[in-house]
Image 1: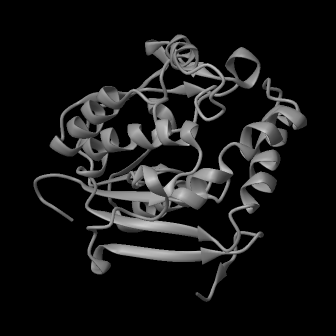
Image 2 (image 1 turned 180 degrees about the vertical axis):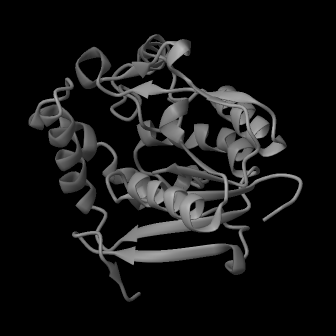
Length: 242
C-alpha cells in the first residue's frame, strides 16, 4: 500500500450486481486478515438532494432518464469530487449518506448529522457505482435525443475518475439481469420495514436504465489493462468464463 495516500479502487457493475456486497466483503477481509484500514463509498452517496433532483426533472420535462435519480446529471459532482479528494489526501472528512427509502422510495440526502465522519488514515478506498467510469460517446451514436442530454453530463464525472487508481468491472452476461436484481433489492428493503417503490414502479424505473447499458460501459478507455480486472457474472451473480 502507498505510504503517503490510500489506493483508490473503482468498482463498477450493473445495478443489483453485487457491488456493495463485494466491497463490504473486501473491506471486512482486508481489515480482519491483513490489518489494513479500508473504506467503501458509493456514488449513490453523492446523489443530489430531492429538491435538486426535482429541479433537474423540471428543467427537462418529459425526459424519462432525468425524471428520477440515477442517470448522469443527478449527482452532486462537486460534493463527490471534494469528498474523494479529501479521502485521497488523507484529510478528515464526512461522507454523505443517501436515504433511498425517503419520499416513498424516491430518496433524499440524509441530514448532515447522519453522515459518516472519517478522521483516521485510510489505506484503501473502494468507490462503487453502476455508471462509474462511463464516458460520453458521440451524439451521432445515440438515436434518442433525450438520452443525448444525459450523455452530455458524463464529461463532468471525469473529476471522479481521475481519483481512481485501478478498476474492478462486473459485467453481466445479459444487461436485462438488472431488472430482476433491482426488484429483489427493492423487495428486500421493503421487507425490512422501510418504504419502497411498488413492483410496477421499480420495473418502470429500471427499464429506463437499459438504454444506458447499451450506450456506455466499462472503465475509462485510457485505463491500462494492468489496472483493470473484468469479471463476467450470470443471473445468479456467479463468475463465468468470458
